[in-house]
Image (cartoon, rainbow, N blue to C red; front, top):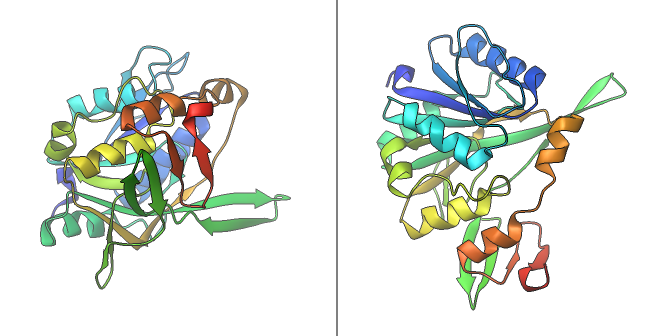
Length: 251
């Protein structure tokens, strides 16, 4: 399958250097891939040869991604955060092939969290953000495991924000909830599960995550939307992948 059937979407906010690093890495490995950037920063970042959609300031991650989906003209899209970076192991064609070969609706890779120490060496750690979700008595439990395992992937319910998905399937579930400017991740995948989307995780396909928190970015990112997300999911509490519990009735 041609990579030209995939459009990468990137919602960015106040991190121009991170965005430029990501775009450079995409062009190194996939020079022909269509990339759409949605920017709701106070001033738009200029990236050569990239279509950049100017968004209302602070419209949020969910609204920004939905606006980007409206401009996607390919049957599949690749969801990326603006602080990712491609490497030799970021094999997008493997994820796309899985959508076709196994009738999967959304196929994700693994995110490698990277942090440089003393400017001398880089520590890399797998996020392992995949799992199975169960809801009982308004308590959501997310366990780090697969529902079923195949040779190179596992079926699960929630995966990182690094995935290829069928555009029509994500549009049919309403995309992202625009009331959630941040902390929209769990709510998105709860709805995907309820809509019956088949989700896969491929640990061999990876992308690096170089998180940065410039002052302007942190002021937007540190707001709490989790209680509202919990209300939308119809839950009072959750137990997350790391075993941490949270009761939203006391939030």
